[in-house]
Length: 531
Image (cartoon, rainbow, N blue to C red; front, top):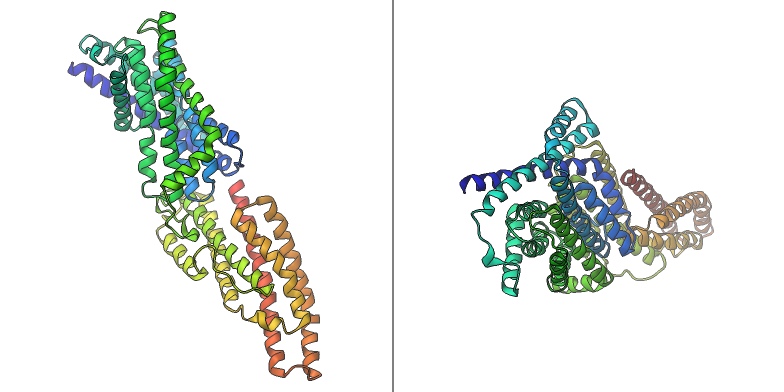
């Protein structure tokens, strides 16, 4: 018995090691593409679903996709609504692991080729660089997975003779619920639903458990895979917690459907087709069951994404001020996400500032900041957050940090402009100067819109408009200053009033230049993120 248990533990360890090597390598090769794909999602749930499926199938880890999704939501790169589609898609994508194990690990017995695959992978890792070295690690991980599966099958075959699970058969509600709970515990302990599924497939193929027991275990494993995301989101922002909660709600809902509808149907079909325990076909049937209940869950709950979002929002309330909700300490371990979150926070502060300036230039009283913070407090919070940021290691992250620091510096300049907003009252006294202010106000309002909503097409239009208005204000400065001087020379205004108006004119010109410069910096930063 001890030999079987040690072989089982070693097999699970090898499988997990292989999964980590393969998943980490694939994530490193596809990480930027994954980030870009998630960042470019529109409001179409089906598109989000397909991206979640593709990303999970590509990196062979639904946990990786879910964790990345939670991180992108925390950083403000992905909306909560789109994240729901990605999470649902990840649950379908992760079923590909079951098919790989059932087909290659059991039907074609790829374990005989595993050692040569590991050798080739090791050589590529040692002799290659960059993507070639990562490919070698992925191959080595792939080979280790199937050596682990081979040990799992040996262990399960030995345990089949000594372990009697007839008391926990897959028949009856109580027994099935017990197996679901065992499946949850398996995944929580192994911290990988793929490893738990591989162990279940090995037990099924060796005859240690029957098909009914295996399906109940898989249902529990699908629930258990939410544990990692729930733990990761625990110290995160409200949006991250809501995303993890939706993940749990979807997996629970899919499990209920599978438990009451799909499992009885699949068990009946398995008996009708006389699928023998320990055969390859029964392993393929289990992989099909895993895929079927994820797809059925998606078909039922994807159209209800809005309802899931409302439920999560009612359960988890937003406590942080809107302007600081993206400064999530859990993102600091991934500098790219922390930098993006900081930029998003600064953009929200800039949106408020542009809105307030536009209001004042239109002659309206100043309203309260939408972010719930003054720009001064927001910048203090950003400084404190960046102090905790580890030094970025990649060149692209260093570039993004440089652009972020430039943006923050320009934001400080705009904050000083906001402090001199009393100049607007002086501008109203001179028609030539007020004409310049009225031309700038609507452009600032549109700038506030794209800064808050990140509409890329609108950003390009507004940036160009800002350049044109800034150039126009600069061209008109001579005529405006002449009008002020003429009023003073003809005694229509006092010399002191003229000096105030000239100061206000220079303030308005600086303001238009500063906003245009910020728009251009943001354009350069967006180009970095889209490369």
